[in-house]
Length: 124
Length: 157
Image 1 (cartoon, rainbow over the protein chains, first blue to last red):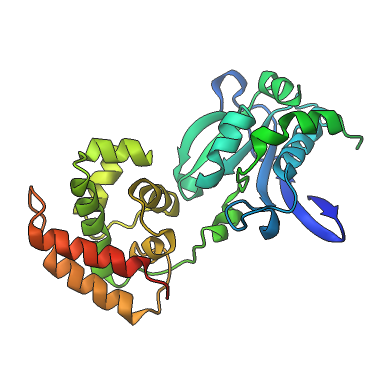
Image 2 (image 1 turned 90 degrees about the vertical axis):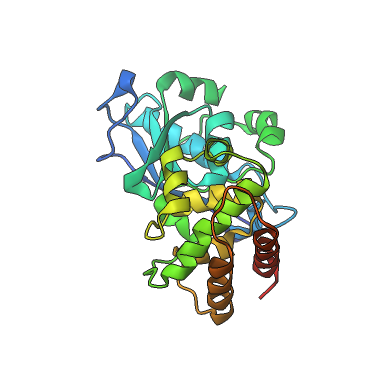
């Protein structure tokens, strides 16, 4: 589990798994990756809940941490997650992840995956 | 763990990331907010399907237009409008609410995704379902029923 703490408060939290979630994109199917079980900002940093979030970039720092963990584990930056509808733009556009569509086994949330090339682009 | 990104990298992306949500993982679903519920009140689910049908027709949209705007499958859009036993998932309800400009939390309640202890909503749903028979063109009565129900959904509780 990873967290970002600032001014004595937890600003964002991420829970990851390094096993049990093999990649799904054809070019890397079956390979190991870091799967993000959960990631969220604190409510006061969420643009959907407050007009002026206290801290930005919480998501970027947490996703970059997941990519870094993937590199350190020898997974070459491969990560995967199921995005909530309101966060799909962040993962598709800002993180450059591949959208593999709705996953009926995960309440219909869309599944996103990052390849090593996409990880390198994300960190640039 | 030594971080491979720095302040400069973060500053470079700060503007792009502004005002974007990041929630991921099915644990995050409570942010919708959703609770498990048995949609025992089929009238509310029926009213949900009717509401989607009328809102779509009011805009002059085909089912394909609706599915495309909400980014859901056409087959699911058909089931929502025609199968009163079908309970769409939270994502679908969220997408439909956004596409049609309807209040998300009330739509989650109406669709059977949240337990409701709201007699008013139940009564309004029955009234709406009874008055909104599905026909090709939106009748004046249907139009009035739709306007009244959407107004009720948007009222603060």
